[in-house]
Length: 288
Length: 307
Image (cartoon, rainbow over all chains, first blue to last red; front, side):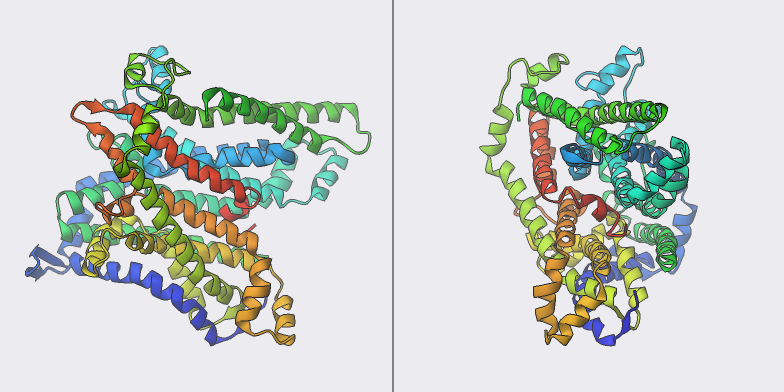
């Protein structure tokens, strides 16, 4: 669509700018401020330049948290994207069944994140939870609170359960946008099910999949509440992801300087990915 | 909802799903029988796969629901799919204690505030982005998006200090404003997607007919994108409802969200599992109620209005 050049449109954007700036720019400036100072109390502070940044960059614990974070994000993407596509392909398209399936599939997305943690905390326990009990039946001494591998399995399973519906719904809306004529043509050509998927459905899903992959990447990169409730980051630090180590440092130990420097590095990583996301989408729209 | 009715509703869901997918596969013209058989096999696989997925999806939630009707002694004494001594005691505890149920009220208050604020500021902005080019529009759009991607953990401490210093700590509006950080950009994004689907000619015709901008916007434009507005409201509701980290940090007593109150079930005498489960079940209910209204557009909303 061609757009008219009109700088008065700024007046329409101004309220958004003000409200987001209040919640974003002022706090961000505070963080920048902390990141270059050593603060003992509200009246005693020293300028330390890039010292905190150096400390953060060299911090072993943070490296570990970052690596865990990447492993986690890639694991859940590798499971959720294919699974989401499969579910979307199986979802009924017409009638009451379609609405009902939509609502049921969307339910996990509407549950407060701490409750998602609670649900799996209960579900994964061998004494009172179905999943834990089933694992115990299989002869596995399942305990996500003491076994790092079990904790990982439960956290990943929880995230897959929680967020695959998002990918499924995205793909479902992508599939609905394919005109019936395409399928009729494929039927006339006696195209196989795989060919229909590969040459008709998948190309139409590219747009929504890009949104899905990036939303999932960023949200999983920011994950805090669910693992916090489920495992508290443990056993040890085996499921402590970036947000949680940040909160531990800032609130738990009150190391404001390093925590602020850490925040900025963390934010920059996400901003970088975000920029890639934005340019890709803009590019996509230009092609249309 | 009792357990038996949840089972029957699930069974009826399978039947309706089956009908739905069958009618979509019904060929209008006679087709080769091999292809027909193949299609029918695929349909059956889809039906079975979907049923299995839905059962796996709903099982953890059912388990929570099941537990919420049990007493703690029964919960700890062994696993069972149905409560033996069906009890509403856990729910009675929540509805009989203001410190419990006020958590739900608080959450609903700040979520509604956030929904209204987000929509009010996002509607004109989304219109500007979908219709006009202006200095810095792309940068502005990107900056908005980057806030959607900002980890709340980064802003935790500054938020606490900011809202304390302006005297808003422990008020509903503080949480509502804090949630604007990610909900306003999201609202602008979704609305922009829906608005771009409305042809420009409609605007131009209205202006030629002598409509002023505000009159055109409210009387003609908003009704055209009402499904978009509904979906946006739903998403603002959803993301504000599920967020706990900021809400918990910015409140202490008067505006404390239900998610923070739930931690009270941990005590020296151990966990009160039944109460925790009941509180959890009650947080799921509002979501299910609101999604019903936007069920047909929700998928498009998840794609940020861009399908």
